[in-house]
Length: 210
Image 1: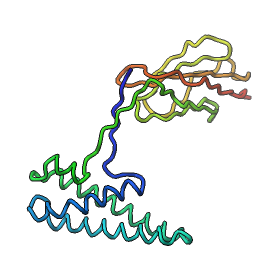
Image 2 (image 1 turned 90 degrees about the vertical axis):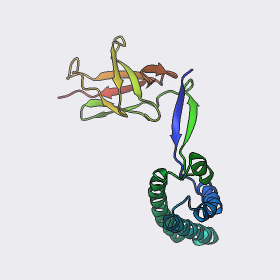
Image 3 (image 1 turned 90 degrees about the horizontal axis):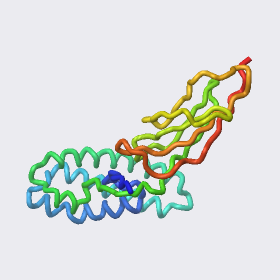
Image 4 (image 1 turned 30 degrees about the vertical axis):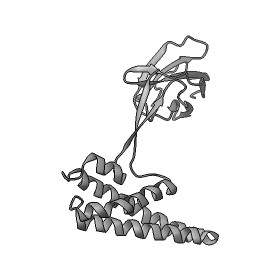
């Protein structure tokens, strides 16, 4: 069994999670300002922005019946707050007085999440684009896929490693004037090893070239 470590961003992507971390920061940051550990001006600024973010969110929730405009205002302001919070974290990361324990208490750390790869299989998709098979799949959090293929009723004698999230099979046709079927399956790759389960077999039908 291969375990995959995924870096979880310290900024929560959902509103509820962000609100919990925001409230935690607002609760704990002032004592570190008073003790001189956190930089006062920068931390006061991010506190004010987080408080304004909270106000916008509360107003959005109040205005749910006419939520479209409130949502736009919230998202616009929230995206800027998230950007500023990232810049603040970079500064804190370079502040010697701020220990890893303080960063953890303030929620200013990225977390590692471990996933097992046993049941993972590529969501392989394919279609004809410009006369060649175009394959795509979800890559993250893996390194790529090991792709296998065959033509018509032949053997699976094609094998290649795909590092990106898509692949164009540009091998020449057997007979361009006839319909050709390309068939594929794949496994995920992680740290140079094939992991997880085989994908579903997919087929791409190539039309004759006149």
